[in-house]
Image 1 (cartoon, rainbow over the protein chains, first blue to last red):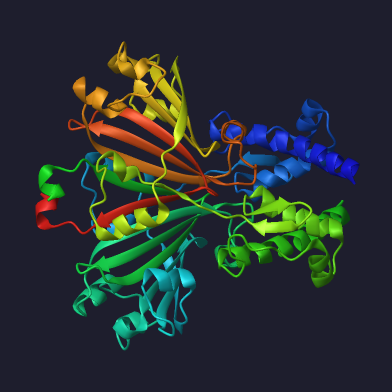
Image 2: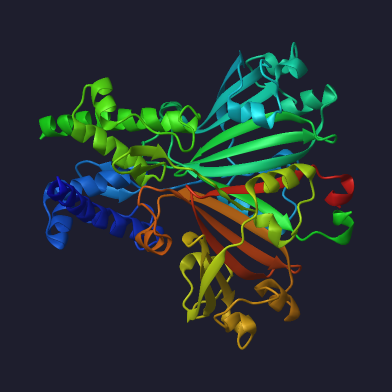
Length: 261
Length: 261
């Protein structure tokens, strides 16, 4: 059994060495977006391995969304046009620094389309904790998938305590013209602060399905909790951002003494 | 050849179904941190597959840093104590909201140790662009690996235009008591604004080596560019955050009219 384990690690190493080398070249720009990769035959010669090992190595990179296969021509570095996810847009629609203006212009704001499903649901432990719900309290879940050029780009699911938003536009399965945050404000729950948490991990099967992901594509998992002036949490928004399609961006500035007060 | 391809996808599907199911249970807390997974024999029975397929499925999760093998007892969900990475700490050492105070307390600030290497280097295209360097301009690179309890936790590499920091403490391979930002400020380059960009991807071989990563662990790749009041970029800091060890967090608040001015 020990022998088998060693053999397996050995095979994994060849395959991974090839995919690692290519990934490095993609990461540092040696292989630029749109560039053609060496052919399978070239890689087979270069590494002295079987065609099957080369294909397994290329499969890893296809799976991570880094390259695409265009048969019969070959493999190409995927052209990434990452979408900017800017959590701060919620409280500050327009950038306040010339640097962020330039960054946004370079990445061109594209407006996504979306699908919306609304349900009344038991909160997950994760949502219940952040909304400080008691056992048995339900939430309204607004689940959206956003599309860009027909491709699913990200998941944005928002959760509200049912007690707060019953019979409001937040419960209708359609876009809210003024935004859910304005509805909450009109109910007396204006959000003035938020905590963002961002986790990096591999996708779950549900995320793979909703986002049509290759299962080797890692995701950013962004949890935003919005608070009223009194510190009451009134909304949790969970955004799932496939790593191959996004850059997440913030602008910051040094606090002045006035800001600190 | 078509037949072989189909067979391969078929095998991949069984293995992935098992790892997907377990990953989902870990993600939603059904399998809590520290929990013991079903045994290989139980999974073999449950899915009606070979022991080899079950092991391959478990290997995927080990590789992603989600579970650990404790032979001969079995597999366990890894106990994750994520470290908080808070980019805003640079301009605002203390949180300004009670929510962030609570969040930080829950996650306990732990002070990392670090190794430091300083070099004069050609900038990568990525760094040169952000520092607006001309061809031939060199940078000072301060490369750090931060350790927590002896385990490498993240990479933090900072890059400064050589012209600005020649013969300053920034060039010494040791901790800078007052911080590199204060050194820059004393030279007349006080950073008052920053742009953060965060990318999510699989690690490169160099990152795997420096962070002792399992190669299936995705990373957050955080690029911070710091600007002076005049909009001159004077520092790029690149932090590589293994997804299995970090949560990245920001606090935000609604702008008041005074802030907008």
